[in-house]
Length: 186
Image 1 (cartoon, rainbow, N blue to C red):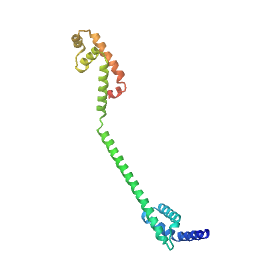
Image 2 (tube, rainbow, N blue to C red; image 1 turned 30 degrees about the vertical axis):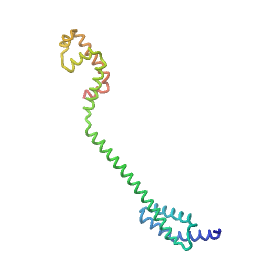
Image 3 (spheres, rainbow, N blue to C red; image 1 turned 90 degrees about the vertical axis):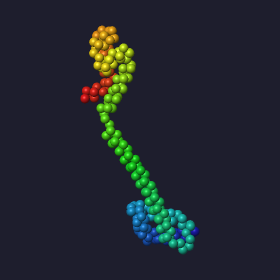
Image 4 (cartoon, one colour; image 1 turned 180 degrees about the horizontal axis):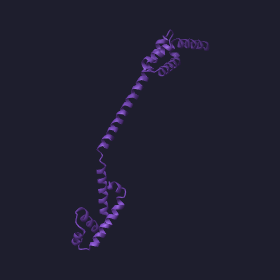
């Protein structure tokens, strides 16, 4: 194709585009429902038609060719939008399920039981770390409600010695439970 033919072809193509531009945008808009997207699709289609001008046959119906290109590009655009909406919907469903789970978990949460369990775990761990005799005296005093005098008689030791062991455990527990002391008071 000579440069004169190319200029004539470009001039004809430009005229064709200007005469039909709005019609093509309305065609794309009727499916896309977005003016900016319709204009983009038409411009991309026109560029594609021009880039493939070597494939045009003599007497080609450019309107039909361009409408086919616009149709295909619009279809691709709508399918892409459909995929995006499905993903957004799936993400929304996932977020909704996660939110429902957090609400149900929070409704089922009983802080006093959580603290009771955690405090009991710390007390048990602390008692296991103490010498057997100290642990035994504390268990008799606090868990079995045995008086200090009865513990002293049962273990064959002085009342002061029993009080010393109980005081020792209470000091250790105060340190281990320092983060829970305020909640224990309430």
